[in-house]
Image (cartoon, rainbow, N blue to C red; front, side):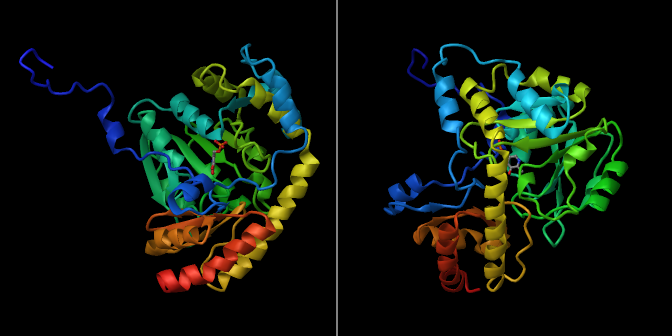
Length: 372
Ligand SMILES: Cc1ncc(COP(=O)(O)O)c(C=O)c1O
């Protein structure tokens, strides 16, 4: 206020370009439905979590680590990096951990791009990519998916220019579940110039059953490949926020420079170590999810014949303009799925009972609400 009582024009304190940027939209929660619709116990199939609870030993490890909460965590994340290195057959120098792999995606942009540099990715894909690219001051180059909803690798390779610093390949792709096989991915890696980093995002690797879908870790001996993995999905630690990246030591060292210090808190480090000791149980749970994914896919194809085959723990219903209406109809019937306006709906595979509850609402939601 001035002394005459008039307001001064507001001073701009933050970046104007952020106004145009979408916020990351998390899956809606049962608490949202209880509040808005009075539905007390909605089923959440919206965030690609695995429904079987924390792995054995994880809660105890968190409780034990919590007793030391007055101390900083190990900033070098030494024990976890060495456990990850041993499990995945790489060296600890090749590993960086982050507050979820989404943080590592952002760190990778910051480690590779100066303002105006370009990041190529397929679209539609993980909704955080445009956000982390823009907030880091880089420029997105989204390349439309093929009609089968998968990456158009030829167009992505053609979109690489001398401004491109990074390309993201999401395999299997979130949210469409589509996947790349070995020969096409290798042709693409060969086509991308050596001074452009190819980030293979494998958040859903543990659910892959097609032997032709390559393990990205098989390519990290290439200097310009980095692989992103997460403990949020198959390993059941979404709430603990632990992701990791594997790359050549030079890339890993650069990424470590931009990681916020102490990003991986002590309970998260302990939880991750405890989870990694449960690999057999993870495999068992993933097999349950995969069996359910295949069952749900078959059942849904009666209503949505063009539903793509998924190698993730979710399926994609390409409903176009009907996406929001369908998701709202599911919510009204107590099931939360994830709509992407104008495009489709992603349904996360839950327990058999949860999937049955979803399948029970599908027919009426599709036929009554969007005339399919
Ligand atoms: C493709 C992909 N990458 C990365 C992530 C980030 O996972 P988190 O940050 O929980 O590790 C997700 C989460 O949904 C994802 O779908």
